[in-house]
Length: 515
Image (cartoon, rainbow, N blue to C red; front, side):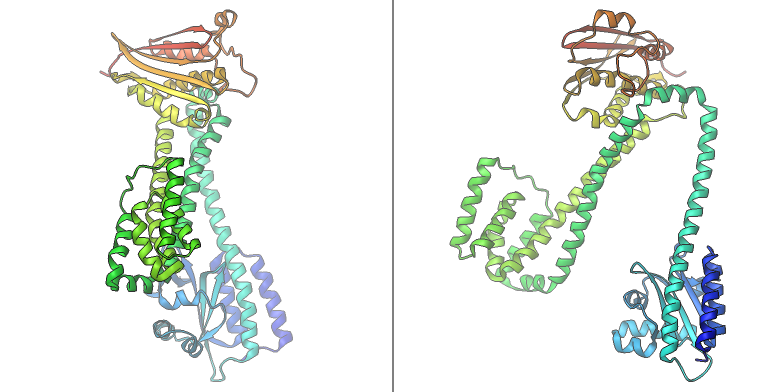
């Protein structure tokens, strides 16, 4: 190539770097890069392709919507290129790849009439590539390649920063829009939100909800990692699985392990004593079958811990022939369904929590509607589960009751306050009994705790506005006087009876239906 002398090139390079530092637009970066290549490398033509998430492929930076110029993400050559972070000619690709990759590369090089490709890789991900043509027959020299490598590093960093900046701007604009929308909603429902703020107990409840979601999310993450490892080992052992299937004496054992592994395990779990006995007998049996003690112990621990005693004979047959390798291959298959089951169970838990949270929080719904009181209490319990699961026994006596016309959001806040009061009274250790029943034209909700009871002096003040016995920062901050106001707004009544070991709040709501 017709490159500039070193001193001229360094001057141009410094100017190029300074220009890039001032840019946050990927398109402008690519345009400046293209000009730099033409002026400093004597390039007749170059094509800079960048990743376009919306298009699902790599496009020329100035034609991001031109489908004819798209290079798909799963092109065999691009998948291979991700692991080869250096300038490459077609001949170099041919000598270091298989036929499939070379054919795909040849198509790409011919399609864009290029002689060299410069991948742009960031954190093991291909974010783009530069296709380069020369205007002479001399081709590339070592100095050209060294300069291209340096240029590659600068370009990757600049494009990555610009892409990140663009995403950040987009997120910021979206956030600002959401904030504006929410601010408008807050202004329109200010009086309702003031009451909601008093009732929310945000610190405790948000922390509890986050914990409730983080736990199954952690299980999903760990199970997904295990699945990835299992699948990797399974792929490595495909030749072994083929041998097992083709070996008549082992085929049935192999297929049975697969069948049992993916079937629902309804076997009764052994208690500690039975496990100890089964572990000892199984290990002795496997050793008597001429398995090495260490291998026998591994098989024993696996089938006892996973409650898969039914696979003892099948694993023995395979381990007797293929030893530790055979056991590990079978354990990976047996673990697939277990990890999938963990993921499914955890997803259901997250969905349950999110659904309850969605139904619980209706800050934008101030109108009355026909609502299921029992469902509202259930959702409140789910939201507050983190406060209840450590020492509180919850007893539910939910009888069939009709839907009633009410504001479910306000009533959910009432249940939250009354349950929090009970948890606080029991100091996190006791029994919480919840009852719903119909009595004539009313629905009764009783919330009883096994705490020490409420003194006569406190009972006299309990309905005073914002009266509380809690320290600052504890509970929701909503006095029972406002709880009473919400119930009376619904044409209902609230009362309390208390003695040591039993405090009962009774809420009675009229059965009204929408017209």
